[in-house]
Image 1 (cartoon, rainbow, N blue to C red):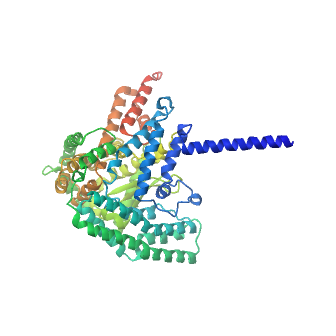
Image 2: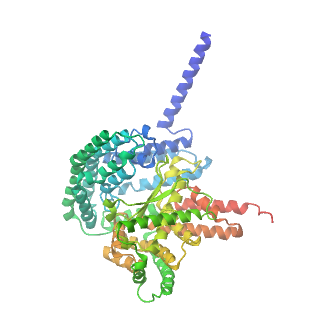
Length: 608
């Protein structure tokens, strides 16, 4: 018996040692199986970002040891990330790609890692404090919308994150000073608008600040009830931290931007930055995932603008509007009383309710067009008031992976005059169903693929799908009136114009005013919205190109499949293959769809 016990103990120790060696080998060397490498790589990047963990709901609240931390924005961390990217790409290429059962995952990760590393030389060609998605506004938004407060521990973690803001401010300041030393300065308007935004932020009484009101609203609703006396203590501490730590941190940013303003050199595209032309070529490739040149993109935009202009003209003439530019005639409709909501709280509530009704309606009628459907719902909410002035007209936030938060379509209600009814359906379909919500929520639930394939961001795919969804909704009968169709065409025109003005600003050296005038003439959008859009492109070079390039690619693949398969073409099957692969560079999406076409064509015809 003793000998048997000793042998059993030895066997157990040997098994434990083998397991330990396997784990250590998988952690620090090339894992034996590539799926282990995929997950190690994803976790290595994800676990370095407490904000990503919270935003995606990667960890349950009780196990989230990062819940009280904010991301590391230091230069040292950026250096370490690029080193990690190089190591990951080197390790990936040591696997035999041709022997893999899933070469698509290999190709997707290789493309992602390579384009990130290609951008290392341009790591400072950005503006961390900007009017669109700058850290100064994204931090409060993150705290309000993504930090979980399920009870006392969540509230304490919230306070801990507030205390982290001075550290973040110092790290961001380090990067700002590095950019200034390299001669990479934001356009003048960026510094002016962000300074005004931050000044308003710190001028707010702490108990009225979104960082305080968020905690005050969530505490009474916590799943694990917090006693009222404890709530009072937590709120008092939040007020103190905002006043004594958060506001001084923001004041440091304000002081820096005030000093930077006289050094800025006007409102220019990135051609004016050091190595700016090469940077823009990189951004075009990054966001379109193609090898298109800026000139090719510009010419595509001009052709598409001319085509869409003719279609819009026909509808406008049908409405009795024959004189003036497309923009002038669209604005005439957009300002009609029958197209506007009351400029009141009740009017804004009606807008949100109507958006939700449009989404619910199309969701119930897409059976003939889709097999795949998201498991999570989508709801409509207002963009927080503190950031409405510098936010886009709308955006979408995917569901949490743990199911704790649905998909959210955020609508900007800063001015009801900018929300004519004829364009609302198109926006709802783009941000909600069957647009971003279908694409992103389905991507999160794909089975049999590495985790990174469920979360990988590819702008040309994601925005191309959402723009394609606008057209699909029309084809499915959910743009019931000519004015609804005009709203869809205006949205497509908007994306075609982007091809022209983005390349115009950054490659052809257009002025900010020249780009504004062109977009106003062609789209009919309000002047203030056009200004916000042009200023968006100035801080996000190339991103706006992804929409139309991606949509055109999906449409071309659909027509290629229809031509090859004839009567055997199934639109639901086509959507399955596009959505089930997750976000892919357009070249890989083309390959995936063409493989599906070949497989469908090879099937025996159904018996008569």
